[in-house]
Image 1: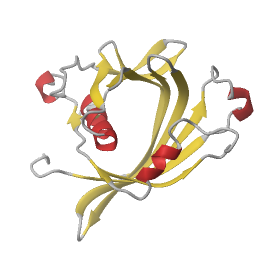
Image 2: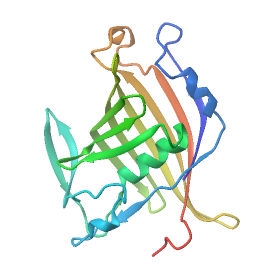
Image 3: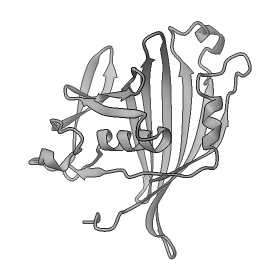
Image 4: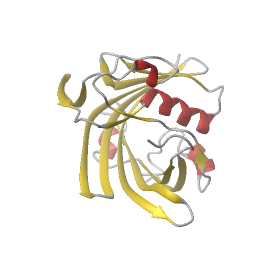
Length: 223
């Protein structure tokens, strides 16, 4: 994966600016490369094919939507391709923050929508996907959207927000680059109702990030 932050804006600045917004400017127009892994679902999937970081019990149904703490199940179709979220989350974190900053990424074995990232300096990020949707526009183009509740906490601070990530994927066969997937991604950050500035922002995003993504298969990874 090659990920490049190409634009960022704080629509409600200077009144409201999220923690870390200014620090993210260092990533503007700077491609970040890291490995990601996807697994084709099989009824007899061997856990050893999953993240070497931590074996997880792979569910036969994937939590689709969480409403009032009730998880609705969506059965996976035969041959479905699923992201290895532990492996990918760890690699993304290390690529952005450095090897020493991310200690572990764990998926809740009872709820695959819940991910906990342990960082250095006794910091923890808990991310829970609360809803998702996707639309297949044509055989080579689909759009996905996820809404995630995030809790970032340390010994003396707690910060909550909601993140909406929309990604437009395109399958491309390029003469020079070969077979790749390109994507445009928009990440919108919203304040949590617990935030003291929540009623100032109402339903407006307080930060917007736009990324260009490029996925290409590693040698030997094609089936």
